Amino acid sequence: MKVTFLGTGTSQGIPIIGSKHPVCLSNNPKDRRLRVSVLVEWDAYTYVVDCGPDFRYQMLRAGVEKINGILFTHEHADHVLGLDDIRPFYFRQGDIPVYGHKRVLNSLKKRFDYVFKTKNKYAGAPSVILNRIKNEPFEISGLKVIPVNGKHDRLQVFGFKFNDFAYLTDMKTVKDKEVEKIKNVKVLVVNALRIDPHRSHFNLEEALEFIKKVNPEKAYLTHISHLLGFHDEVEKTLPENVFLAYDELQITI
Ligand SMILES: [Zn+2]
Ligand SMILES: [Zn+2]
Image (cartoon, rainbow, N blue to C red; front, side, top):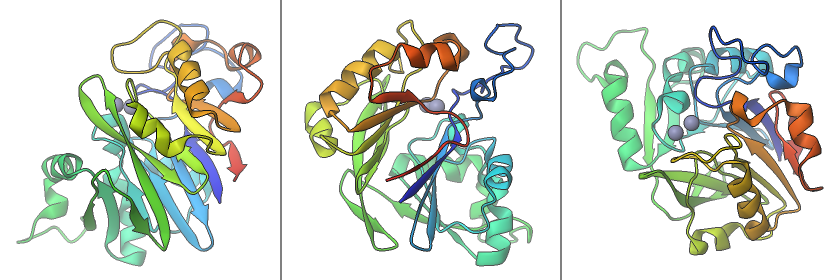
């Protein structure tokens, strides 16, 4: 399985528009982060987790020619606003399967009402196949995916475990019985927003505690804000098996 980090930034991305913060002004490409998303590929299959406002550029940058589906963690703007840009895939492949909690699918129907029109639908609009997921395993192209349920402040969020790879973002609390599902996984990706605590995201300390509980071989931090600091400096402070993810990083599991 190959995983490509399409974006590793928090909701505003880094740099933030108009910001003079040193991290936003950094010349290190690893400090430039698009909105959070990963590409997961195995055999002939390609799936994307989340589809935020940078989706179009992320697909171009990673040279993606087809996708088999999109899994949504939750409905926040930084995770769903790129949905209209599935059009090139839709024109070539037909309806694109999307997977999400019932609440997330309902939110897509509201935000992208024209995608779901049944009468007089605009010919240029894309179409999707809605797949509702609950907190139980489901299959995509023959691969078993295990949802990991968590909370983002008070909002329910799904992480996903694909074989030996677990991807969790926008988490603030995860119950022990959910942690059990990913214990000792080979590669864990988890969100770490900044140094200071935040009401809806793990800060660095909470992310590191969570990693200890999960005990993966390797962990990568994502959904990073400029307030975490410079990539190269923060990475030096991390435990041996923990790394900061950065845009375009590829890992094989
Ligand atoms: Zn987010
Ligand atoms: Zn969010």
